[in-house]
Amino acid sequence: MTPEVKFTPDMEQTVDHEEDLTREILATMAASQQEAAGKHRHAHRDAHAKSHAILKATLIVHDGLAPELAQGIFAEPRSYDAVVRLSSAPGDIHTDRTPAPRGYAIKVIGVEGERLLPHLGGHNQDFLMVNFPTLAFGTIAKYKELLGLLEKNSHSPEVLQRLTTGAMRVVRGAVEATGRTPSAIVEGLGRDSNHVLGETYFTQGALRYGEYVAKLSVAPKSANVRALTGSTMKVDDFSAIRDLLGGFFGTEGAEYEMRAQLCTDAEAMPVEDAAVLWKEDASPHRPVATLRIEAQDAYSPARRTYGDDVLTFNPWNGVEAHQPLGSIMRIRKRAYERSTAYRHDYNAREQAEPDSLDDIPN
Image (cartoon, rainbow, N blue to C red):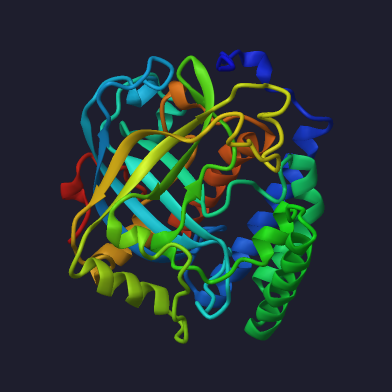
């Protein structure tokens, strides 16, 4: 078996004109967020603006992990309180009738270790995931090229967005028919309305994993959510997914498996290009923890207000043992801080990190 690649700081390489590209991208994102806030008279996140559920959960780190997996917050078998947010990717509030990538953000509460950004406060670890393994704009330079298209589609009328995603599905089908793999941008814009609870979610970008480097994912584990994999949601209302998840978690819980895919080849599995798929035959996704969600009110009025106006998820809110890697992750450090500051200032709400699940409204 190929040995795992050890983390070293020189694995990251600053790209040409990275600072200039970062400033230009942040300015575009800020303008888009401000436009949406003016329209709604309320500020939302500049990506994954629409929440579908805010869930209390427990993350149970498995016992007996191999040494290369027993790293960072997974070093010892234990249970953590956690919060999960399910969302859709656009930076504005759209009808659920329009297919879109879906997000699965996890906040692990009460972790130990040196903080990446101590000024954020709290002792939590955030992992942000999307329901396909690669990112269309895998580098900051590519992101700059595609940002105009992504922002334009995000703010297009519903009918145009549905035409775009429909066309991308046709392209994806044609590519797959030839035996090739669709590009990340085709996969992203042509996403079907698969049931959000049956999907597998990925960090897309690489993270430090203690002494090693990995990408993380969460996959359905309990029978009830595994049965939903590949099924299509009925999304004929504006907030159909919220209602779907509210009905599900109102009567039953679910379990997901958190997995680590360790880097075993620094060239074939680069940290600087999140559009490159790390192939499972080179390094499989290996279980490290179980995420358990009990039946609950997934989006009560109090929880909605807390989740949308107070709670923040940031890939850099965590410990050094899980430092995000690559240019896309580096720009996220400043993008998330800027977006969060604007959202909380515009809405006149204080940002706060939960210390326990008691801080999450029922």
